[in-house]
Image (cartoon, rainbow, N blue to C red):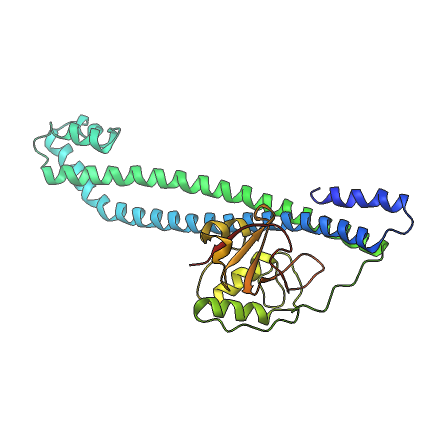
Amino acid sequence: MIGASALATLVPACAAHADPTPAEVQSQIEKASNELEDVIEAYNGINEDIKTTQSKVADVAARIKTITEQITEVESDVQTVVTAAYRGSGNLRTVSIILGAGSADGLLDQMTTLKHITRSQQRDIASYNQLRADLEQENDRYATLMADQTTQQRQLADRKTTIEGNIRDLETLKRKVSTPPVSSDVSRGTKTPAVSGAAGKAVSFAYAQLGKPYVWGADGPSGYDCSGLTMAAWSRAGVSLPHNAKQQWGKVAHIQRGSLQPGDLVFYRSLGHVGIYVGNGNIIHAPHTGDVVRVADVDIMSPYGYGRPR
């Protein structure tokens, strides 16, 4: 189980030392919490993949509907042509050619030998057969997407089970040791800065969420995880971001630290965590399970990179 390494490290330490220092305990719990958040962000990523797949499924389903309607529209005309060809030829071979061609191009080639069928009719038949080929292709795509969606949903359920188990382990560990309470100083004495434009809306929103609990998989309004907070903040500014730190990194313009401005995003732990920069060397972030949305130093962890939503 992901996150178990940090928990396993602490349990023997507790057995060897009857009274571990608060700093030792907090260090191990912090490690376990960070590993847990990595699993949560992976869960969020799969959830975003499902949204993408569902969108593609809807597009393909709409395409299938359109093609089916088009086939229905031209089908009667094609049947009329086939019937006329049969009557004009006096045998079934012509019908076999019309209905048995391997492709629209192949049908058109064979139909050129039937002089009593006009070029316009040939185009109608070729169009009909192309629509049937398109429909078959779209049906195949639909089946593949549905299989992908089923796999993603199964992965999502597995991740959820892992997360719930890790949270129980973490809560059990916290009950066994004396850990420092979560600090109520969520603002570090900072005040909402005056920032204009879309970034100002995102920053103001983030400040308004201070003190709300970390809730895994949540994007408000009563709780947030890290990428849920940054997504919600920039959504208030009219910018759409996925609910996943790694995917947010793929959406933002990458900038250098010297270019940081309030509203920019700061990424950590190989894209396992993200916060929103609010100026004066501070970020607002949702740290991990058991904590709350708070202001922190931008170097609370070694930053992975910096990005500007657009």
